[in-house]
Structures are given as C-alpha cells and as structure tokens.
Length: 344
Image (cartoon, rainbow, N blue to C red):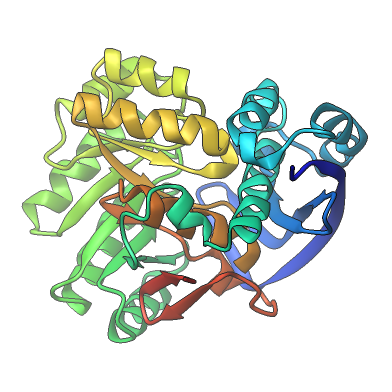
C-alpha cells in the first residue's frame, strides 16, 4: 500500500529574465505553488501550480487556502489508484485548475518513484523526445526580428510570435520576421487582442505575403464562438483555441460548433484528467493538438514534458516558460537545443 499521508503547498517566486509582454498584459515574475504529496513509506511526489487570473480567474492566496482541504480529500488514498485521486480533484476544474494539475501530477510522480519508472512511461511512453518552440514576446519590430533571428539560429525551427495590440504593425512584424528567418514556421498568438474581422484581415494579409504560419492561436475573445467559427472559415491558416479551451466540456463545445482546427492544452487550465479526455476527443474528431504553458518553472514544465512524451498526442509543443525565468533547473528532463527529453 502506498497511501498519501500529507500534502503541502510552498510558494515559489521566479523573476522573468526580462519583462514578458503579450497582448494587453506584461509579466515580471511568476508566483507558483509547489505541491508535495507525501506517502506513508516516505516517498515524495512533486507538482507545480502556475496560476493565471487572466485565464482561470485564480489568485494565489485563494489557492494556498486549499492546502488543508486537498489534504483532507486525498489523505489515505493509494497513489496506485490514481484515477480515484484524479476524480476527486476534478471538483476543482473551474475554481482551481492549476492546483488540480499540480496534485494530479504529484500523484503520478510519487507513483513513478514507487514503481521505479518515469511518469511519461506511466502515461504510455509514446515518445522519448519532443521538440519545443520558443516565444518572442511583443516588442518593437527591430527587437522582435533580432530575437527571432537569434532564436532560430539557436536551433528553434518553430517560433511562437506574440501579437495582438496593433494590427497594421503586427502584419509588418510578421513579414519582417519571416524574411529574417527563412525556413522557420510560426505559431502566431494574438491572446484575444483582435476582433474576428481584424483576425481575418491579419491572416489573409500575411498569407498573401508568404509567411509560413503553422497555427493562428486565439486571436479573438474566448467566449466569441461565432467569431471563432467565422474566422476559421475565412482563414488560410489553422485556427487554435487556447483561452476558449479549459475543460473537456469547453473543447467538446468548440468541436461541436466547428470553431477550431487545433486546441492548445495547458495542464494549468485542465489538469491531467481533462487533458487526457481532450486528447481522446481530438483523436476521435481529427482535431490537431498543441501543448502550452503558463509561467511554470522547470518543475512545472516537467509535468507537460512527461505528459506530451507519454501520450505522443501533440503536433506542436510550446514548453519554454522555464527558459524565461531566473531559476535553478530542477525538472526531470534534459534539454538539448529545442529537444526536451524525459528522464528514463
């Protein structure tokens, strides 16, 4: 028996190497909660919650207050019965999804230690290596072009480009970045900064100028499903939902209403249990998947590396937040250029 006897939360604050700017938002630090699950035999499983008020409506003090509640709910459970623990934590799907994710992963981490195998093998062991993009935040054209060129030369062949504050300038930025990084592909993320009409104009304009956009991510407001559908049917590029796609129920609604070509799964939005359901929904309906992150440190990115490698479900991986933070690397994976390799 490998029973849970304690659960602890610890606040970890990480500064960004430089301010990280997306549409209508700038981050200077990440306040994350490191979750530890303790077993009766002394085994410890570790997860991380990286909260987002903008996306999930979460606040760190409110999440911290859940420590005793979570402990009470899962104490005495055997990590070998991890689906039972997943079901218990599903009660936090809307109120505290990042805590849900951290506890669910810490459960699997502890189980992996007990079994002597890495988490990605518990989740299927589909891939032994994945490749991530790297993000270029909003800045001036010259700065973004230079960062894109440098990142591409470092071996990142897919670049994630943040836009969404100025349509005309965004078009110029994408054309300039494309000219500076021939052979690269781009995940373009407007973080809800456009209207549907503006997003259509952007997509058609950069397409006409031969910019290699692989995915156009969440250009309009999360709850504008009609706008997403209109955009999807008028865009030459695949449309992805991020802020619109939190739980499996959200994704089912998006697919049923023909709103998206791709879904960006983030464990901080959905937890592992909903993420597994979304993977199956996508397979059934032939919808593409990418996996992203919030402000996770290497401890939190570790969760998504093992999930992505284990399921093998993703066409694109956007797992780079740890590269932007000042921290001591503690993930159970190796990084070689754009390759992320879960420990075996």
